[in-house]
Length: 584
Image (cartoon, rainbow, N blue to C red; front, side, top):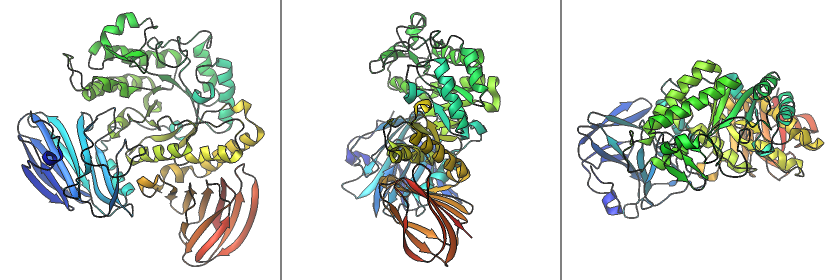
């Protein structure tokens, strides 16, 4: 089997075959495969065919030109240009995806690609060559004889968002989990509001208020089950309701559902703690102890472990009448990705595919198209859309900027599914503007509220109710429109969503908002900054418009009609406030 190239000289050498498309050089750097191109109207596909079993290593590269950054699903805060000597990383079904986009100073694509090898593991490397001033991406994978891998290249010059949308649509299989209407409305989560200190009556009281605010799903997080105390997961494994907190869990679930809310419970089915009764039986199938989690991790390559996980989840849904599950820590399975043992399945991604397929079949049989399954970053690549329909941002407590970035990143690789924010929280004494900005960070996704609603101050109640109402007013634009968030390395400081003749523009930093006066019937301008105004750059013919300005609490500041003319215009909008512009 061909070894992975390590040094930079080796990375750029040993080419067996190369092709050119969109100015991209595609080089096959290993023996035993063939490489050819398949031109398409919306992109060019490179096809690698294994003549014999072995390791395939493919390199894509382009001249740097005006490239300023590189985005991939696990970019985090680093969207700049790495060096090609920064090393290999492993992606698979439950850990990111083989997708990337090199972009220039205008935010346009220089090199955009996606591999259809989503359900098996791929090793990937990327970066700038100091020697050649080119940017390279290497993908390495083990192929069986006759197996094929296709890599789609996006046409350069389009925005990074457009390129990623096309690549994601190409990856769609039609097998994605259906998305019920309940997945597309705001949700209430118990995590930041209660953590593990919860009781049935308190949760029901919060659910009633949340339902009145327009929330349609209750997400019961960690703490409902036996042995749920403190940090760590030493009590996981039995998934039995704590009788002190929930004396009649079935009745509790029905009570919340009776308020018009769907009920989804948290579970981490791969985690096996020493305090659980299941530990004695299942420990042999969980050989890895995760010190940071204080528990063992069930090995999905073991049939006994998969059966236990599927049975546990299905019994939870069936026994208590749940509408779905929030399935956590699926990425923990990757601890077995480099295991050197005699397990039945060497490829963890393939084992997880078997596990999740069996789980989907069991749960779908119970709930059908109404099934709700929440997944979160990083285990939500395009292939995971078959197994989850609530796609949540990774944990970022009280970090509105992270919520904004994470949710927009998810959208870049999600052809279907409802994109949810991380749970929203703020301090009880926070200024209304600070609370409003937390909601703004989730605005281009579906907000999950996680504060004690019954204990909110009057000001915070106004903030929560007002911004959820605005979100509902523009729901079709925010969740179904075309979103332009600018350059990924600038962290989406101005985001625009457009659907038909309506638009929402949010300034997360002080930037000029460009607006065509003849393009829209209604535009919501959200000022999620500390400034007291926004600057508009108006184009087109003069137009009469009604301008309704409200502050962070939803109190009307002004409401007037005027003629807007082309050119620069300073518009007074309070910090964390909004102006709804309606054109005559």
